[in-house]
Figure 1 (cartoon, rainbow, N blue to C red):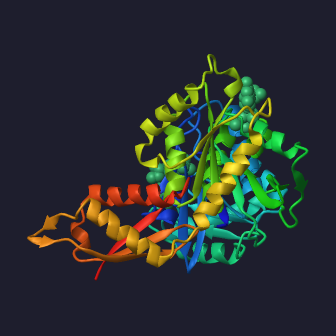
Figure 2: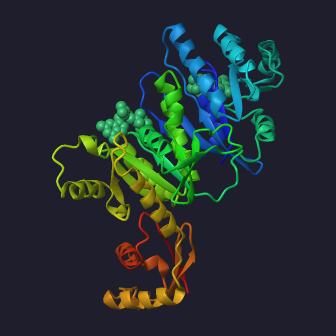
Figure 3: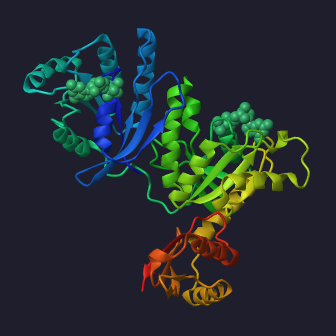
Length: 435
Ligand code: GDP
Ligand code: GDP
């Protein structure tokens, strides 16, 4: 897991400018769901061969000072809990304000390392004036200009020195199942149901200080780590800021897990946010299971209803019909084990390897069933193919003119692979190379 750096400070000191400079051209995850704050961002940064995540906690829109103050306090609290390093940004143009002093107080009372960043030090004079910020009580002060880049190299050098090598995740081969989904779909209810279940043995995970929301579960003689992305939010008093961190946490859980369990509320359907989560999981090549929770309150359940639900969901993700769907009721503990059974099947599918000899007679057959087209007066030919790796599975095909292979033929091959070998719940990667 990548270490996390959070940027905190009062509005207008230049937090988002610093964020943009740190992540450069990399893609940020934007959280724009809430009205009270400006967008918040989360992205990856890279310096001296080290990668880390950066979180811009966002700026509060102008409002009554006490509202701003409360919002910032809360962001600082979460940042402390979630980060390996905090950049506390102040403004050499505006000088020290009472908001700066109250943030400083919070940051001094805790253990996470803090670098005080005096931004807008665009010239030497401002840089000299920045020494006034030592009165805030931090040892390390970095005057920078986020706009021009002045001083940012020194800051980054120090940042990567302070970051832990690896986040203290125990190295483990125990499969990790991440329970993800929108708020209120029932993730916590499900996890609690499993943790209370007499057929599951729950043990502590040694060495997990920060991520105590991960639980180790033994079920059917197999160990699993359940990653709970809702737990943190439950512990916080005010929801708003924490929602953003749950976006961050979801993304991290997706990157970390072997199988993502996307939970939906059967009464609320499949929305853009669900699509985003499942697409990310597929982009990261993770195993995927969809769980339709709250099946108990779905009216008029007949035998066809689950089929209809499946069609409704697959219509929204037409390229992902390989993802299995399980209906459950977390509250009534209906089919809660089936989720793990199916996740375990997916995990095994993800590890599966197909013998090259078998794969090649399969290719031969499907090429005969639907011959490759002619391109630029040359008939396209796939000479052979092989599964080059598993967990996640990658297939490599050797052919003439790979750049000419039509997208629909690619899909044809994928569909045939799934007909033949299934790979239930597992995104597969296909590479076509020149031979
Ligand atoms: P945030 O509210 O803390 O995220 O602050 P912003 O990043 O939105 O910046 C607030 C204002 O300060 C914007 O007008 C920026 O252009 C400006 N600003 C940011 N960094 C610098 C800097 O290094 N020098 C100067 N002169 N202005 C800056
Ligand atoms: P989370 O935000 O995804 O962790 O969702 P929670 O576990 O907090 O559940 C949100 C709400 O849905 C709570 O009021 C739960 O009691 C309710 N809920 C969870 N699972 C079920 C279920 O299977 N059936 C019904 N009817 N309600 C459920």
